[in-house]
Image (cartoon, rainbow, N blue to C red; front, top):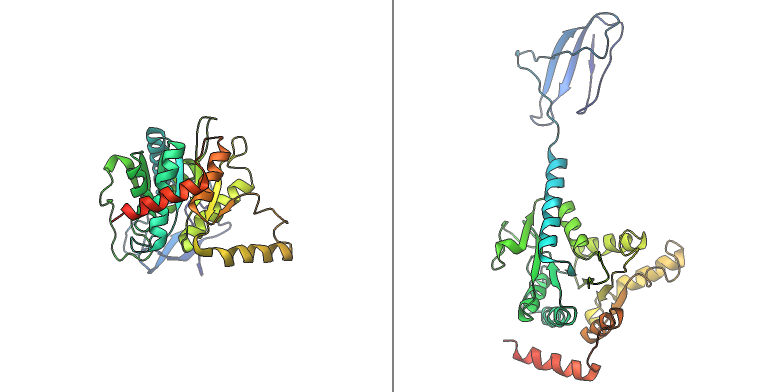
Amino acid sequence: MGFALLGSVGSCVSLKDSHHWNVKFQSFILKESFGVGFKLVNNFKACNLVRVSLCKSEFVHFEERTSPNEVRKEIEQCYELIHRLGRGVVYLGSSRMGPGHPHYSQTLELSREIANLLDCTTWTGAGPGLMDAAITGAFQAKKPVGGFKIRREAGEWSTSNFHPYLPSDTYLTCRFFSARKHGLVDAAVRSSIFDKTAVVALPGGVGTLDEMFEILALIQLERIGSELPVPFIIMNYDSFYAKLLDFLNVCEDWGTVSKGEVSSLWKICDTNSEALAYLAEFYDLPFPDEGKQETELRTAQERIP
């Protein structure tokens, strides 16, 4: 008598009142089927150990997945890096908007001014594009920088474990996206009233939206900022997120989002000055006159080669 059996690691199959069975196993690694014959006696107890062999007298070994332990270890490494460099402002943004893009220079200016205002570490995904702009701005402010790199960003054709210019002790190359997200979230969590942190979402694509809405959900569910709020800023440069915001308004009309629910969780800013003024007010810090700030930012931009 024959039948097909599909089992996962950790499963237990008990066969009762059986004699001789021909079992077919499907190997997901080798993509082959193996016919296995073995004999069971009546009233076979599940606690007995049975060793099953292939027709070629090769033993089948089922190994547990090691990835959970590897993810846990990588998350711990993220936490260690944050503990060493300090929490601060986390920037989420496109890896495809390079130095020639206007949003790049705007991000560079914003990062530099926020680093000076909050005197904190700048955290990014340690990738190219707007992440690189945020890193450069923090370097110009002579403030610490940390990052959680992934081996390959969207739009890149090569993989690398190394950042082209960041010191190796200031970033971690993550194998797992889940560990990277843990790091980006934890870097913005305030553990004391003296922590000055924020999340700044810059223009971006699928990856940026994924990170944005995950953090939005964590704030909504009070998994972040339940005791010490964390400012969450959306940089709506050139109305980049206008259609997304329209969609969220449609969600309110359909009743899938409560009226004013999302708008209460983040701050939409069209300019750098607006974002800086919001952070200064949030942390009760002195902030220059808006007109003066705009002039300083334009002057700084003209100095950028």
